Length: 69
Image 1 (cartoon, rainbow, N blue to C red):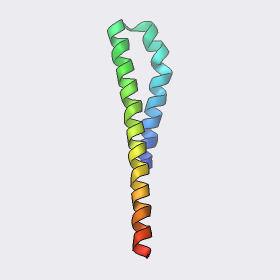
Image 2 (image 1 turned 180 degrees about the vertical axis):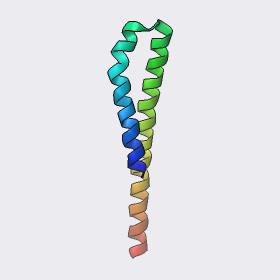
Image 3 (image 1 turned 90 degrees about the horizontal axis):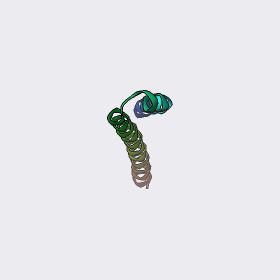
């Protein structure tokens, strides 16, 4: 289930990145800055979720290795 949310957020980040040049051309400076902050926040949040997912998987593998012995 977690991978579904990561994929959805990844699609959102790609769509935002595609629209970034349009936003920079048509919007004011402050709106462009706000857009950039939102894009960077989305990418940072996705990176944190991926890191958490990898950490959870490694902890689950360690837990299953300990319980087998």
